[in-house]
Length: 136
Ligand code: TYD
Image 1 (cartoon, rainbow, N blue to C red):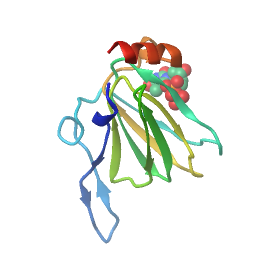
Image 2: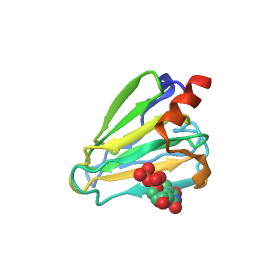
Image 3: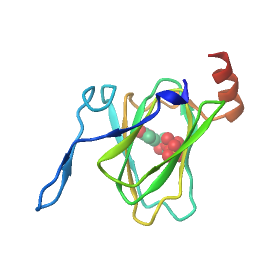
Image 4: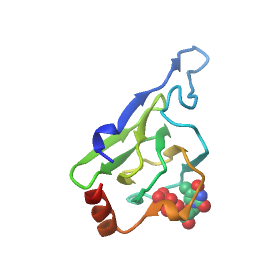
């Protein structure tokens, strides 16, 4: 999958003196139907998450709290997105190698996924990823 399909998506933002509110609905604000959500938290300083690609799973990643960087790689190009606000997120199409790093203290990454968890959907070997990305 090409890196050009990855993009930051701004979410609705309802400003309110009582506190702001953002939301998302499947297919309306993100380009897939939602099967699963998970979140990453309590990441020790200097740790990296991810380091794999998904064959079919698409994701939308939001920094609900704090900040972190997501680096995407399509086998040719790499791009790093810094996420640090809860009113936008990063759409990650399937078929991209990705990792997440530079988590700030108390950061919370919310990930919305298009597929149920399936260990067989992961490509964890970088050479295999490069081989399959060239074949596409
Ligand atoms: P993994 O996706 O490898 O984490 P990361 O990419 O952030 O390094 O998942 C870590 C572990 O959690 C792995 O054993 C699988 C399990 N897991 C589930 O059981 N369900 C899920 O939805 C996810 C995302 C992970």
